[in-house]
Length: 464
Image (cartoon, rainbow, N blue to C red; front, side):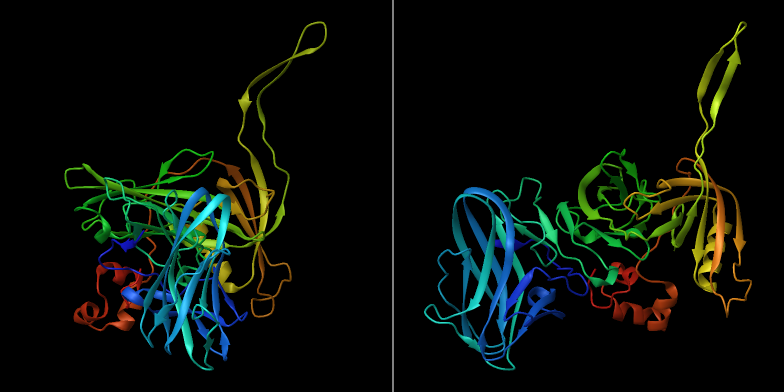
């Protein structure tokens, strides 16, 4: 089964995320951000040391019964040699000749007998009879590795470029698409489905938000309006603030959703509409929002740039008053009557560690008093959610100026509340200041950035 890239203009992700490749000799391979075939950025590079080289994708989950596994990868050697492919102890492929400095697709079909939950794929320098050494100082590079079956055309976690889909698409041109995303946003792997190449969702731990990119060039037809919804297990599906339904000429969008829950899987769905408001298509992305145990995020509604990550020092008693009362009955005893309970209240203390953090926190409090608070702890003392700040105070424990004692403690009196209304402020991959620092004129912008999407991402190389 051949695999075809249905995206006419590949948009590879920045940096690399090829950690699934394992190389022998151990440690010989290193992930690099150079461009490979189809201008895809990211590959695993092995430096020769007069030894045979093996690259493996270990324990790829397949979950099949009596089914064929299909393997393809792109390989390049700086010196002419031969290479074979093998799946979990099966027969090797015929040797594939690798001319010097040319990308070659290596492919293999292997029938898995019985029920198997995973396979390991090996690519080895071999002439079919004996191992072949990669000379000292020469390089062998791997990228775009695919492992697929008829039941699972592309398998999560083992695909390293954007836009690949199998031949067996449905009538709407859809297929499973899995991709790696890289270090620009310190991201984890994302899973996408829907029309290939439309939506990318990437976790940004610094902003404690999910960076959303809708590539308008990937819609099957013209899109003029967008809506993005967020879904998590146990919670209702809600629109992302600021993208409830917006006009988006060209069908593209870049922004950040920071109001999603943390330490869970979050699914996003983007709906594309034409000028009349009719649905063109939709696409999905799933991302894991992993926070550290010590993280305590305080967020303003609709503005990811104001998010603060502080040290939670103290949580006082949580309280909730019952509405109603206990009424005495003639002759003794009492009758309790309740009309529900007041919302929870609590006082907490957080600490900043520098004058900049203190100024940023006070700026946040000047902008909003209904705040989203999220604690990365496994069993947080204060429940994640929206809290109204009735009052706050700052304490200088050491009674020293910032140059001697930079830490400050802030106490908040909080009342639990619901999600506030309001619009969102878009947070993208760059700022106008950063753009002006690179480009003096508008012509410089046109010469530097291939598309408007690249402008808002601050990416000169045409990568998203």
